[in-house]
Length: 183
Image (cartoon, rainbow, N blue to C red; front, side):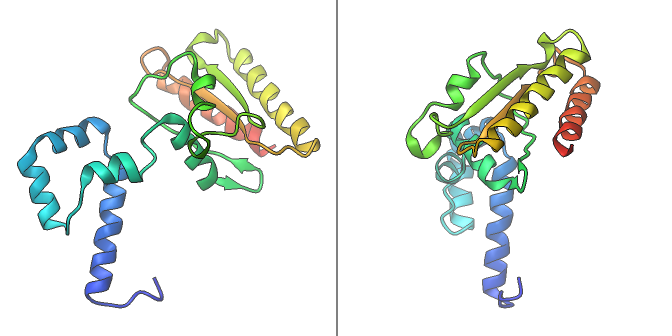
């Protein structure tokens, strides 16, 4: 912000950032509806300096595939002890999530040879102690891999279906993971 000049350049920059943030939280359905209404899409392109919503949303952002999105999130949210990201989606995730996350071309996937992915489906666990055990096993494995000079990412995906699991249980699972991660 300090190097940003006041005036038209600043306004153009701020407008671009606002559009980027709005497109980041837009759903695919809303984007497709906008694209399908040719007049609205053309008006937006004309009013906002040739903005191509389709190209911005589906090509420039990381919505093209789950592996591309996950890799982007792992890079963007990493800190000294790893990456911590809570991702919510309206899209159902399939049971073959580990295979999907490790698939794709080299630039859009988690490195297969060095990655470790643990997939837990919350509503399939009957009791809290099962979840605690899965979380402990995951973080114990992370520590062991770190001691062996790990090279690839270690990913825990907890799939929480709000139709099959209460929101309270989802929040509790998030708390357990964050609490264990900090220790």
